[in-house]
Length: 71
Image (cartoon, rainbow, N blue to C red; front, side, top):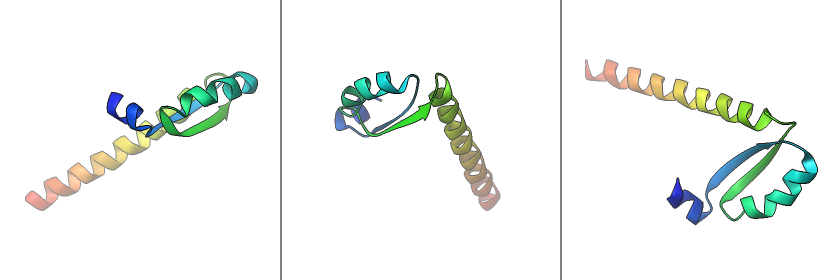
């Protein structure tokens, strides 16, 4: 969010033309400590979706373990 951007703690997974990525990287590093080039257009979104899915699976497992522990 905004606080993480101000602190420079965001991660950017970027797809597109590598020259354009290199031109934008300086601006992105103002908001994020991790700026990763993923390849052609759409690969940054694919990487983010995979990351979000992995985090969701982890959170579901955590919630299930807590629920079991409460029972």
